[in-house]
Length: 228
Image (cartoon, helix red, strand yellow):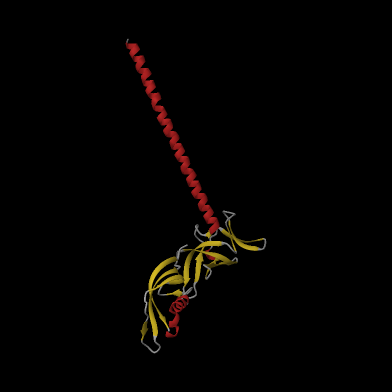
């Protein structure tokens, strides 16, 4: 899935002197407050971190309320969705007008009817709403389906994404992956078939050479006999 990246960052965390007895815990608490929120500095949503404290001794910062400043080096896992990226999520609600998706368990997305390609037809089967492909009967999208879709726009403040299923490489992940495997298997079979045909043609060509030489030898013998 697009939108996920790792980054290395040099940070400074400010800890109140009242928490100086357990600085590591205070640092983790401070960093945890940044999780699952869009951060302009990181240009994305912080999903996880691994931190290494560089300062053995904190520096007291002057001000009305003095804080301890500590330098950190952190490995960050970020979620930064952008337009035209491919994202994956789980369908949690579906109607004739829209498909609602949750990504990574915290970010929401909506795909409205005008952004769903004509291949998919809305229908209700056994009381269950779904979008079923007109071309491939096994390609179905319903509540609980994991789908792959294209990002159209992102509202960073509320972490809401508008998506699209207009492209052929979007839809049910399970069906798309199975189709990809079948295509790869077909390509491998076609390649093996071409190799066999090439080997057979090569064998026929190699076998034809002695026959030609034999005919040439027989003709040469007949010519000598005639001359005698």
